[in-house]
Amino acid sequence: MIVLDFIWTIFQVLVGFYLVWPLILYLLWTIRSKSNNQQQAGGAAEQDYAVIVTAYEQTHTLPAVISSILELNYSNYHIYVVADKCDISNLNFDSSKISLLRPEVTLASNTKSHFYAIKRFVRPHTCLTIVDSDNLVHPEFLNELNRAFSRGYLAVQGLREAKNLDTTYACLDAARDIYYHHYDGKLLFEAGSSATLSGSGMAFSVNLYRECLEHRNIEGAGFDKVLQAAIVEKNYRIAFTDHAIVYDEKTSRSDQLVQQRSRWINTWFKYFYLGFKLVGKGLKNSSINQLLFGITLLRPPLFIFILLSGVCFLVNLWISPTTSMVWLLAFTSFVAGFYLALSKSGTDPRIFKSLKNIPHFMFYQIQSLLKSRKANQRSVATKHYHAESIDKLNKK
Image 1 (tube, rainbow, N blue to C red):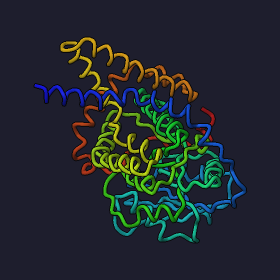
Image 2 (cartoon, rainbow, N blue to C red):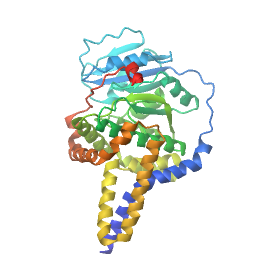
Image 3 (spheres, rainbow, N blue to C red):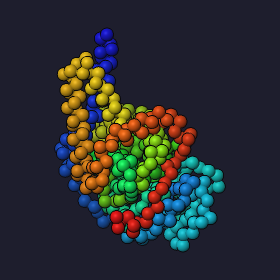
Image 4 (cartoon, rainbow, N blue to C red):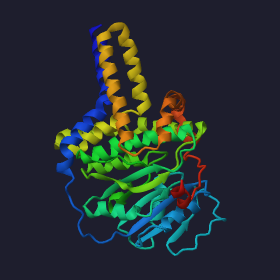
């Protein structure tokens, strides 16, 4: 009985910790942000960017993303479109800044597509940035990335704003992204650690990217998880800038949501062990960068630890009402932190209105969890339904 009580206590501490983690991170950010972010941008030379756009099976969104890239207020870049398992007969990009690449065999891998492009660079670029085929980029995207590189960082994560808020699912997906950008991006970086990578809207020195991933064979989703861990393991910091904006398609349909989230959940279970490695290195090296980042990587997806917290609360109503009150306070802290992230981010009113549908959204998340084990066998990419131009987006 004593052993079971001990296990139950440890389980509750581990789950409950991540309910109050936003509050802890906020306090750390308050203490450390000023001392860690006084570096001023120097007069570094303009970076030469390789803009890698990857597509898998679908090409209908490519004209819009390429058009938005060509409208950048920046000149020193070249676009590499890797159309994996795509029919490119209808694609015609009339610009010397674009290389349209179609692999001879199906790659079905982000990193393989990236290195397919890297091996075909038209010149030795200093930096590369990764953009999804469903993204659009803000005209100042590369200029803002350049400011981060000029401060000495070798890896940068930009801000992924919602391209579409057409359904409740899209709004809730956007709310989740705002939460992560605020805590796992802005606050985590300004507290002295690194921003987590989001799959696109990110940039790296070409040498660092090759050093971290060229020797690895990464199948399925999750290359960004491996990449960020490899970067922080070297004790480099991943910078975050909310001014380098890409517009990202949010999941607008339930089947799209389940398919996408099942891959993401699969990825967390596959790679969360990297967090233990970084926590250990952080303690050994007295590195706040590695320690905080490792703690962040160990955190389960939001809906999982919220559900587990609910279970702990209900069980304690029966065995320890006093402990139930502690859980209630912890959950209140989390809700307040979630609301704080939205309120500090200029959130669209439609997103606030969608929050009442969180239980419905979580139902589909549970479905995703049940299907996560074989997620990468069923699909390797999310289907896209929105092909707006940057002009149409700006008029919304």
